Length: 180
Length: 180
DNA sequence: GTAGTCATGTAAGACGTTACATGATTCT
DNA sequence: AGAATCATGTAACGTCTTACATGACTAC
Image (cartoon, rainbow over all chains, first blue to last red; front, side, top):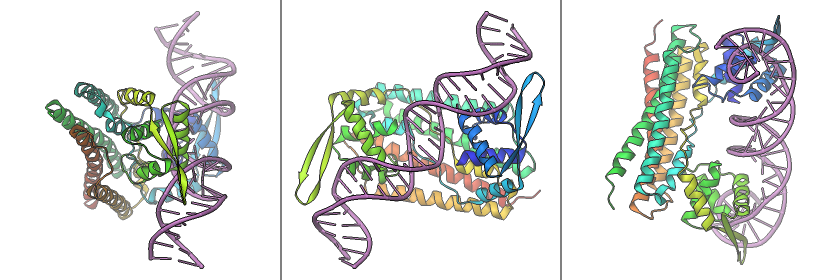
């Protein structure tokens, strides 16, 4: 259900077509959703059925027609209610931790290789995130406070990567001097 | 597919019944899986079809019969292959960040309440995790290195909560002196 | 002429959660 | 009498991803 409100939120900022939303999801780290057609178009239809959005068809010469979606008053209310709702803690499930849990069958070098690949992957993702930020994110800047919130959201993501990298560093260090 | 290898890993430690696995999933933080019957029993059947596990039915007087699952040689190989496979970075998707992204419609006090509830929830989860650890986790300790790995996994989870708490603290602090 | 962008959508399937169903036994 | 534990499983539904389908236009 989070994608529903991610979309509703984006529409509360400005009207979007499904195609535009797809691009936003594909190249944002916070709103990342695998750039997934199916869910986006279906959710838009659902939101429309619930009266939370309206759409206008814009015909174009020499390009396919687009459905531009806008939020309704109802939609704004629904979004506000959801935003104030009880916050849930983040998902902890991490495939890599399960891999590590059964890694004792590997040699020290093999574990080290594994850790190094994980580290590389994390560094890459962090870099991509920072690069996206550097190039300027598409974000609402309706008030200084909103801009601050979005900065903190971006910070949250960087911090997660950095704390994970730290942790891997520790592991690598300990295992490199391992004697038993 | 991670649950498949979580189960296979547990079976590589010792034989389990579906019922036992359910309990492990329910009260572990790393292996948390909502204590979900459906997936566990189905996955066991699947593993069995693939020849990665075998089961033995233990009849009991005055208690329902149980199917005790054990890993096979094939299963051990499959687990080892998976453990050495390309690690993926953790999922970043966090519902709360999406809530915050559209929180600028709320007043400072409302945002503060939201942050406080999130903080409480995080503290609670961290406490639960630490309490579980304190009471002693059910974990394989076949070698000192394995024990170390499991300690680091637990550390990873605590670190995530702590870094998140830190971040909320910063937000709360900044917003409490907010002027614009 | 091949690939990419614009723009919509559907099909199929993997993964996850909640709730239901059964039935004996044991604890309070 | 009522709830919890032991032990298996299924049904229904929600979420998420990958891949397919169409078709005109544009840039190299």
